[in-house]
Length: 129
Image: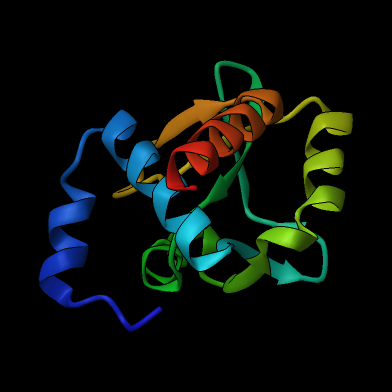
């Protein structure tokens, strides 16, 4: 995908969490990839919300890179092709974690389980065909 403009990024970051999630689902399907922050292979940036570990994910490298600061300053954005997500989703599920889709400005994004994420991707994919 072409690099997103700074105006587009600022506009998208201002969306409410559910709107960012819906945007992310569309972008992930269109680009066939998503991004996480990783310190070393398999060492992802995670946080917690209400005693639940959550793994942050973004629809674009630009968004993920903006959050690589503070506690996550030693992390870098890592692209994950959608067709290679199964082992990561399995790990998230096995660990009892949830997905924090598109957090911004130190705030959580939209929290979903792996099952909800897969269901939403599949539902959105049907509307694109």
